[in-house]
Length: 205
Image (cartoon, rainbow, N blue to C red; front, side, top):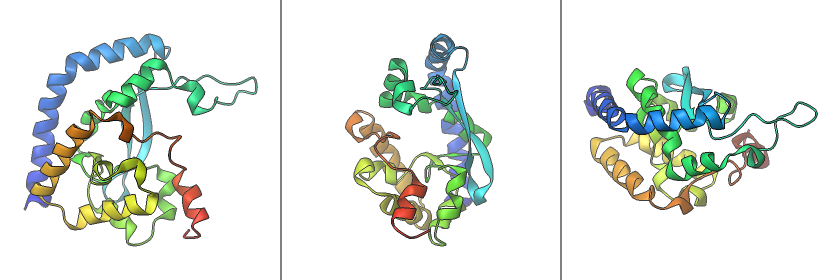
C-alpha cells in the first residue's frame, strides 16, 4: 500500500512544504546565478525515470558555458564557479529537484536518475532500478558514496526497490540530513569515472 499509494502522497506533501520553506533561498540563489552564469540559473538534462520514461531533471547550474578557441566546452573543473562549488558542497543545487518531485517525475527517495545514454549498459537485474520513481537521495547515497563503485551502487539501488518501505525511507532521509554536514562524502564528476567507461573496463557491456 505504501509503495503504490502513500509514498506518492508523502512525496507531494513534503515537497510542497519543503519548497515553500526554501523558497526565499531558492529566489536568492536564482538571482545570484543570473549574474554568475550569464542569465542561465538552471541546469536541465534528460534522465530516465520510472519505467524508463525520460524527463528533464532540474538543478541549479554550477558551471559556466566557457569554451576554448575551437568552440569546445572547457573541462568541468575549469567551468565550475566558486559559487557553484559552494552549492554542490552544501547540496543547495538540488533544491529545484523538489519541482521534479511535485510534478511526479521524481520521488524524495529512490535510485538517483543517471544519464539516458547509460540505459544500454544495465543488466536485467539492474534495470529494476527503474521500477520506481528516481529520488533526490537514495540508499546508495547514504551507504558510502565515494567508496562505492558502480556495481555496488546499482546493487544498492535494486536492493532498495525490492525492499521499499516507509521504515527504509525514513532511515534514508535521516541519514541524508546527517551526511549533509559531512562534505567529504559528496560525489563529484571528477571522482567517479563515467558509467559506460566503467562497464567497458569490466567487460560487462
